[in-house]
Amino acid sequence: MVDFFKSLVQLNADSADLYVFNGHNGLMDKQPGYFWNTSGTQKDVAVIGCVSYDYFADRLKCAGGYPLLTTNSLMAPEAYCIAALIESWANFKPEKEMRDDVSTAYANYQHCTVGAAKTIFKSGW
Image 1 (cartoon, rainbow, N blue to C red):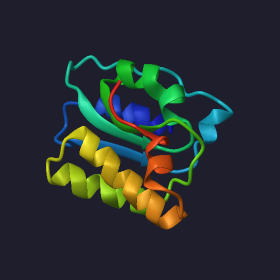
Image 2: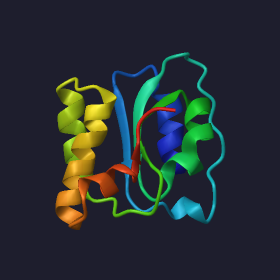
Image 3: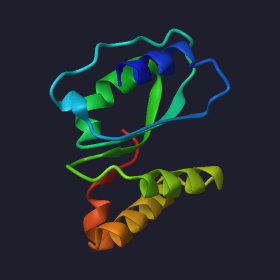
């Protein structure tokens, strides 16, 4: 995860428009350091792992990342979350619709209600 933030800062002026981390939030045990964006370019970022907003909001601000999708609680960070996010993002859907699409995919695979799944995901600051 430290490499994720380093690459976000170092490659911020690069052509990548979306950075995604999807997986177990092992950093619940240890926080990464801060990496500062000096380019002034902001990039969309999704951090799909347990309680990612609370853990990474400050670091995303420093690194120049906009939290397109993060999480509010414990969850299963599985590939269908990324698939739904990327499809929505590639189709230029608004943030709310992206969050809804990911929540719908999550609900389908986790056998919960879409309403419950929506409480897991967060868009923006």
